[in-house]
Picture 1 (cartoon, rainbow, N blue to C red):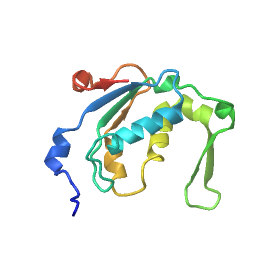
Picture 2: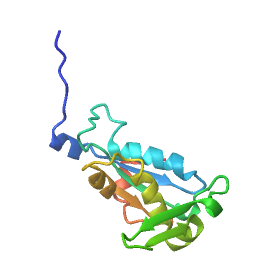
Picture 3: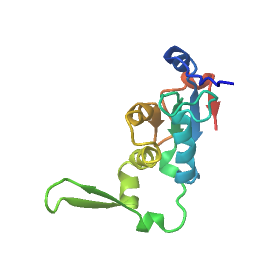
Length: 146
């Protein structure tokens, strides 16, 4: 008995996208980033296909008030390199959270997504805000709040 694989068409995917909202206050960043990455990929949907972009929109607020476990604020560092000799930069998590806490959470979600051509499209649907207010209230009327 042959089995047929169901692939949704792009119109169905676009019309079925929903908006999800998360309040990051007092939440552990890794656990929240995992839930957000799954929603961005669309793994919660019955027609999930790894090669198609079928995820939802996600709004995360209060990223400034994430709860860090252990000694991460003092010990965790972010490394970047310019490509030139001596161009290494090490930024501690505490300083990065003071500068731009949105970047810390965006990097956590980005590194949990697959490294392929779909990742940039999935990250465009992620909206991260350091405070409580955001301009997406109209979209969230029919969506979920978690």
